[in-house]
Image 1 (cartoon, helix red, strand yellow):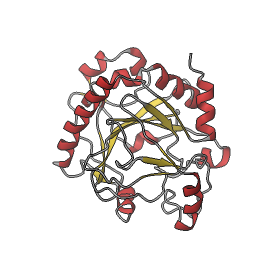
Image 2 (cartoon, one colour):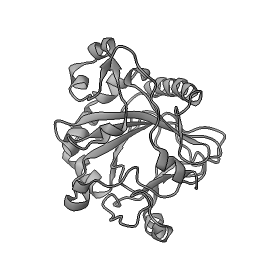
Image 3 (spheres, helix red, strand yellow):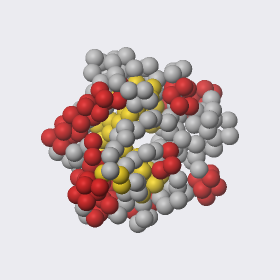
Length: 269
């Protein structure tokens, strides 16, 4: 039995934890197929994909665009970590993916959104980002780089509350750890932990799925437009429905991305 309190401690100490082999490689390959379909569609419409730097994109999708969504959100590790960090009423608020293409460059060090008041004043984390790689990550593919222990860094001079000034970079570079997840692995992190994508020297994209989870009242769901159809809602197990806070609709509308500030600043990388 996984000790989820230990996972919680890792997230509060390092800002990240992980489980190797949570899913089969076949499951991960189906995930990559679904990402490829959604990515091609998103690139064809305005606002479908937002730039996160040169040759790097982020796309949000609806749960039923991912065949393994129910498997993901009912996985014992995902549920256990979410409850240990965020409480039993945790809410699934975001589903999307990052795609660093060939030629993607180093991103600026950043956090994914400004620290909320409860984190700044009480050192309480009220959200998590789960990441699953769609490929076996190699050194030349622009691996994810994170600076452990920086999730509580004070940020009065961070641009937009997210981007530290360059004179802070030595702190992050001293702590930097590159991650090389393989298909089937999953990680959970505070999106406030300072991190960046690195330069993709290979000819291959490195797509990564993102599942965003909130504590009740965190409010990040307001930044996303997750929805499910009536038929899909009924097909989900109760363990998924209990934590999915989104409209149930007759017809899905493709999600228009809202990360305009981040896209603008990332474009300066």
